Amino acid sequence: MPYFLIIIGFVLLVLLVMLFRTLQVSGNTPMSSTTDLLTVDSKKTAEHLAEAIRFKTISKLSMDETDFKPFKNYHQWLEKTYPKLHAVLKKESVNQHSLLYYWKGTNAGLKPVLFAGHLDVVPVEEVTLSAWHADPFKGEIKQGFIWGRGALDMKNHTIGMFDAVETLAASGFQPKRDIYFALGQDEEISGKDGAKSIAALLKKRGIQLAAVLDEGGMISHGLVPGVETPVALIGVGEKEYVTVNLTTKGTPGHSSNPPRQTAIGVLARAIALLDDNPFEARPELAIETLKRIAYLFPFSTRFVLANTWLLKPALVKQLEKRVQTNALIRTTHAATVIKGGIKDNILPAEACAKINFRLLPGDSQETVLQHIRKVVDDPRVEAAIDVADAWGPSKVSTINTPAYKTLELVIRQVFGDIPAAPYLLMFATDARHYQEVSEQLYHFSPLSMETEDMGRMHGIDERISVDALAGMVKFYARLLKVWGEAEF
Image (cartoon, rainbow, N blue to C red; front, side, top):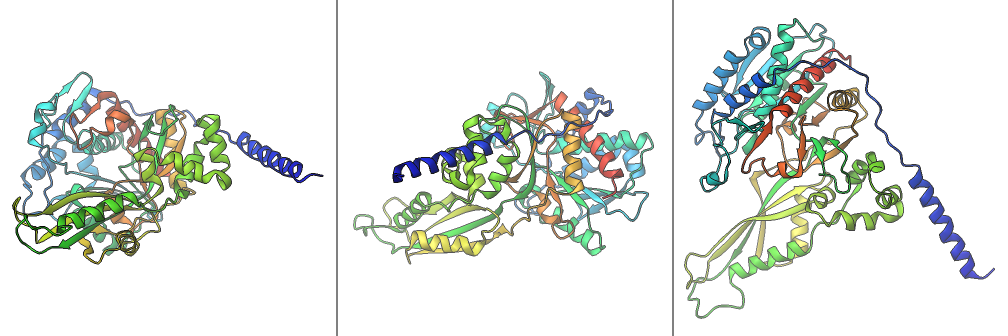
């Protein structure tokens, strides 16, 4: 038999196998049982969030710079607004301005769970105020939305949790397991004084948590390329955060007699080389996420996902086309700060830049430095980890646990039988501080997010709809019951 016929036969066989694998892709979303959800007074809940937004709990770069009077006022408002909660739960101040609530369960043999949040918000730049359609700290309710800083990140979570607990406590509900609520004071600037202190306190008391739920994932509408169906994305880990200081030296002198490259030129070349030589793609975690919802994609994408053993390079090329999906498959970097020179006719003595890296699990601070040395390959460029602006890796939590499976179940019960998928967060949250007291750290913000809404977080016109906020209360009430009573 001619060799070309053998080759054709082999190719056809491979194609048949690949086609068969593609046809095996099917939906994996089990139907949830019908359950009664909490009836929510959406108007009252919206007013609660509007009032909470009016407290300017802005965290600054250090505790000395932060005005903590709004935090204290916010604490007092929470106590006044939620009397049933404060009558049943034990409240404790941690490091003065963070809050830890304890809801005692009836079965001491069950490990506790913790719901994490934060009290602080990011500031609003003065130059952007004219672009807002509502005062960012007035807490206005109009056009079906609550407007202001913290509406999405994350006073909405606090109000959602507390409204749910207030109603459950008033009904006489008591969980089987202990439940903690941790509200940090400085998540937006690292969480070192808030969540880190709370986690250290729990560790000192010998408390090990069955699970932690923090902000992060959401119900995506169009955020997954090629999928229009709503998808619940549940964060199971975070990228490590590392900032590297690049420094170059020069000889001061008159700019009329310049060297071939000034310190700024050497630094600019180094940054350009890093931009042109990114970290190698490692798409395994992204592939796991995409395969969970592969049946939602067009046939061509399903074909690739079903056959990544052969078509992984094609998938990587496709994912690299969008910044959001590119960040899922590799350690990324961004030059965020650059300084150098003092006058236009003086050669700079020094130039420096900050390069912010977000690391995939498996990379480390040392591999970042090795990458820089290899790519830049210039002894004139010094690279050093900014120890004040870096933290260690986040563990990736498993999804084969009762805590994760019941979380998925509650999502379907509250928001309809939608598919869910685990994924890696691109940004940092307070959850990473609880790694020593819990193996299972999950990230989910129980609300639907359109692509345009993502830019409102930390941006202009931050807002949440009245209906979405009511949905958050229903979600927390249901999950508190399920996690509170499940024996895992």
